[in-house]
Amino acid sequence: MNPYILATLLFGLGLGTTITFASSHWLFAWMGLEINTLAIVPLMAQSHHPRAVEATTKYFLAQATAAAMLLFASISNAWLSGQWDIHQMSHPLPTTLIILALALKIGLAPLHTWMPEVLQGLDLTTGLILSTWQKLAPFCLLLQVQPANATLLLVLGITSTLVGGWGGLNQTQLRKILAYSSIAHLGWMILVLQFSPSLTFLTLLVYFIMTFSLFISFKISNATNINTLATSWAKAPALTSIIPLILLSLGGLPPLTGFLPKWLILQELTKQDLAPLATVAALSALLSLFFYLRLSYAMTLTMTPNNLTATLPWRLPSLQTTLPLAIASSTTICLLPLAPAAAALFTW
Image (cartoon, rainbow, N blue to C red; front, top):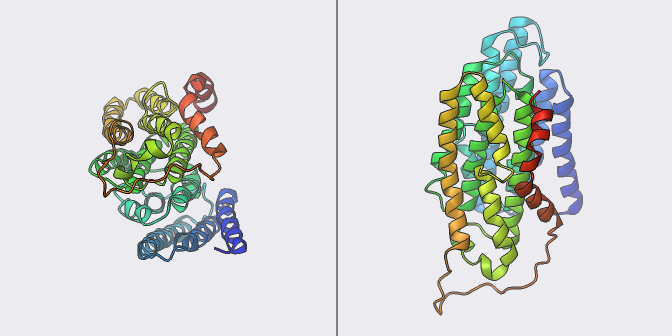
């Protein structure tokens, strides 16, 4: 892609998110979301592969549906209450519709079905943007919609954690596994959204760091399915020893960074007398942990077939920049000792 066009599209992505961040009017927030969607569509379809075009079309249709629903809900709110302000949501009908529209935008279950299919058709760089940056603007709006429908948020959250765990169990494609991982993590964030918005923000930040390091790792080792992970030892031994730690951090195992948000969320849910919900969420984390362990097993404890017809990749020095990966993976693995400071900052 022409660098000037790429710069324009990336500027559009940043502009759309910034407009949504800065807006207190529903029309401006909707406009920011639309700029965001229209900026990423050419990035998704840039390879002109049929799978990429199909994924782009599915993504566009899902986002257009969510945008139309959001616009309809905000107009309904203006009609019922005379207010366009994001903080002045007084009627339950438009509030519920807006939460459902934003859930469709970020891929919360049961409105998640587009997410794995879309992510599977994209390259890892665009998939990283879709899994991280594209979540920011809708989450900003979800944090501002108050008073939100508490039951709806809890149902969306627990459904997402369960679907994210179950859905990834029988997958062999890494991008689909990452999509279901994203759905499960979003469920954890939505569960605690109404009780502690700052804790939701902390979870989103930790999720971004972990997902960034995993996507970059897969991009450097050029892995797209479980079978190609078995050849990673030959290509990048150091990276292959780090990736299982990143995966286990995503699964929420102590003493890794991913344990921190899950621990604080379970503590907060228990404080709110929602111990059964916290139990179900913790059990759903075990489902996600299973497919992370499966990937770790495929990387570290299996050998690639060594028959004569197999063409093994050459072990050449990587020309890709590895400094961002080094910083992100270190953060993904080593931040748990900062838990008291994070708890003090984010759980007031």
